[in-house]
Length: 581
Image (cartoon, rainbow, N blue to C red; front, top):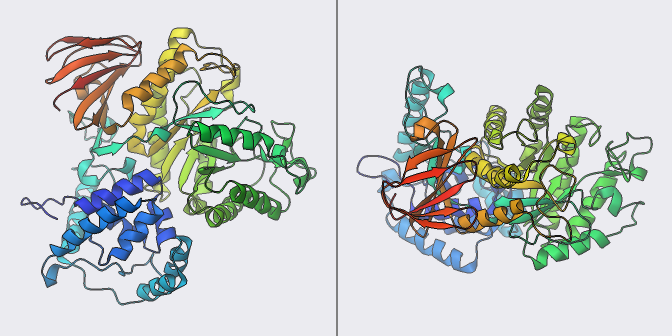
């Protein structure tokens, strides 16, 4: 697995496992919980540092990630070839029963959670107690390299991206954050760069603001149910008496349009917290339920009824605001842990998103997020749902990038190195922001998603635009029963541009040879690179790169170009197709 230069290169097996992990949306922690393998072991498998000693470990990971039979067959062939090339006895890889501090007697439970038989689970638990084999020379070399890297960072002599920052490998990731560079150092190149990663359709999400069940008339990738007549207090107005009509209608419509659903479990019914604090909604309270078994019962009902139909669950909306949640962080953490366990039992394929904390531009909001992280409740979740808008509802959407970086740093400091983030929209200020004019609206709609893609390095994996169906927000993409606005149509065009694409790198300004305020992201499709470029304000002029041959505009125009041609772009993004890198 090493090149002649001694540089670690990921094997084909590692590439396939990492691709499955990325596609599943699960963190290493979530995979560890379901497979019985430790986080560190899974990380070594997916990064190519260790070859699993048996195919059983590969299969467990693949099945939890939703691999198809054809993918399992390919994994077996690749694993067989890889193990056939195994190093001499002194350098053999650690078998898949290797144990570390994280891989104890919980292995059997993890296997059962992944759907393994009791026999497999018992064997996994026995394996966890086997002696640890002698560390291979490859891992000893990696450990030595780690010591050298730490020493270099301590002296300020090296800048690298940490593992898990945006899903890339340390060796393939560069950070260009100038505030972290030594004084006077001039960097040239992308802010970050990774082995090209697939941009899933689900990245392009919308929060639904209607109870009609209607879906967007333009192409999107996923829907989030909130402000859609689907609060807990609406569905269960009396204890154990349910009205599923709106949720059923909406889920069926999403299924017809093949749109994955994120269902927000939030809004305590009036009967469940007598004397509780009122919320922003007449059918619900902000206080948590007086008896958490009522919460457990509702979560189980939903997850059982919609097993395999609702793909993911968000465990409370906006707990940063007293009109949405008026309980303690400790109680919220208990609700999350209990609900996550129930959902994972009822529907092992569903993803669980921890609550959408907001007000993260303010210290109070960040402190609430820190407190929640310190409860350990994120260990129960697959992703972190967070409100990550610009500083103001009408500010440039590129401010999302700064917030994503700051939140990534906060979570990193709390020990959450690799958790994925789903941006669920704005803070409450959006309701009192003046409408955007048509030009700013159309450009903002597209750049909202581009800012999210630029934040890929900081773990951003889904963007839910707020909202679809409403006319009471600053940016309307389509009224219910009406035609899409130009903003909605351009969201559709961006989806077309990036259909089947893989994201590889992003950068901005002088570091990329661009004017200040100009942004670029590099993508690949079918082995060919293309670039999306835009500005936060005004226009920028650049020369077409070597291999450039076509320029696409947001209004649908296509122009032939060649290397050296002048290309002008502005707040309206353009796409430059190329035959070469």
